[in-house]
Image (cartoon, rainbow, N blue to C red; front, side, top):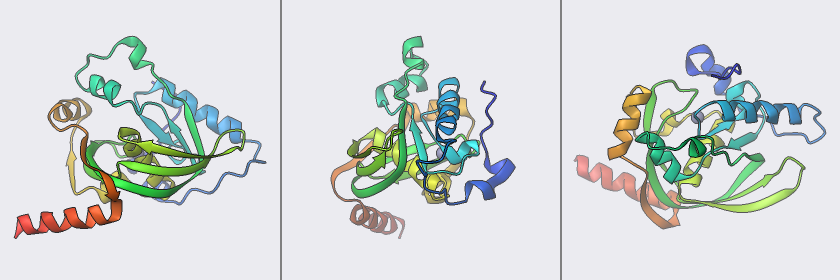
Length: 211
Ligand SMILES: [Zn+2]
């Protein structure tokens, strides 16, 4: 277990609700902040973290594991030690989503949201602008499961939690969540099309089914 403490909704929900500040590359503590994220993600079974979750309210995202094959193996405990230590160590600073395409859904958990387990719909594909640790600007497309993980962390930077936007939330312990995900895995509804439109349409279909 890491000695770095994650901020949860139980100890300070207000803190998690803040909008994180853009990173200033002259800020001398930036390297130290990233080292905190790196250490925590290496020591804990997380997919990614936003800095604010570790008490650093700056617009920094750390991606550890966006590999769906490995994530699925974690669910059924068939993961090897090498896969368990898998770490992409991707640091995204001051990220801005340029466009969202397609639609997916997944049962998400969050280190800050305790046992709240939410069914969330996210884009299949994201075009992102961000800076790396050296201050170089990049434009990159994130696709599939990595777009889901990235969207979840991106929301943290604006104080939004997965349970806020989920269409269903269960309170479920980690072990039960793993079992549940074996039957309810990552689902691609559409790889193309405008995300906002697809969300609106799926909302309509849901309401129709209810009435
Ligand atoms: Zn989270």
